[in-house]
Image 1 (cartoon, helix red, strand yellow):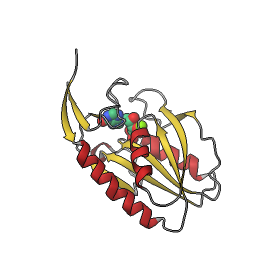
Image 2 (tube, protein in one colour):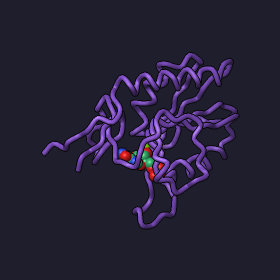
Image 3 (tube, protein in one colour):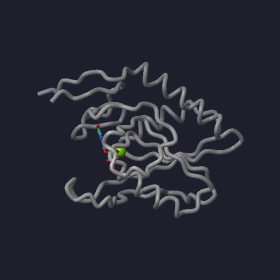
Length: 174
Ligand code: IMP
Ligand code: MG
């Protein structure tokens, strides 16, 4: 049976906000080249929409990660399922993520990627759920929307691999 989905952020709202953030990022990186790292799979829709709106030269790479073990074992260890194709050496890197929840994935990933010698490394997320944060040290440089503690889908985010393709962000009404 189809799940009921309530619209939280419409396609227009999301796209308008991505344009704003893209404008800010383009200003911040003026005169530089930006190396975007898309965190698969959830970050893919946001990365495309963001990249299209950036006015600085952009290169792209992709990485896929999954959390080790279950929620009860909060080791914070993340497995790299697909690593980057290119080196980060001396690049201005921007990690593009769909949502920061506990912050475990990104706190681990930031540490790993910092070791690879980028000129700079920043974090950009479509959504942030700060109420859920376990890893308080995660610093988010660009946030499109801060949302309450609700399970959301669409714009890349899934529920059991479904709904990534919704053009808006919705809440699954269980
Ligand atoms: P964390 O910040 O390490 O807890 O994990 C973030 C990841 O959990 C995201 O990249 C998503 O894949 C997933 N996630 C967290 N909250 C949601 C949600 O509301 N909807 C869909 N996926 C979510
Ligand atoms: Mg994700």
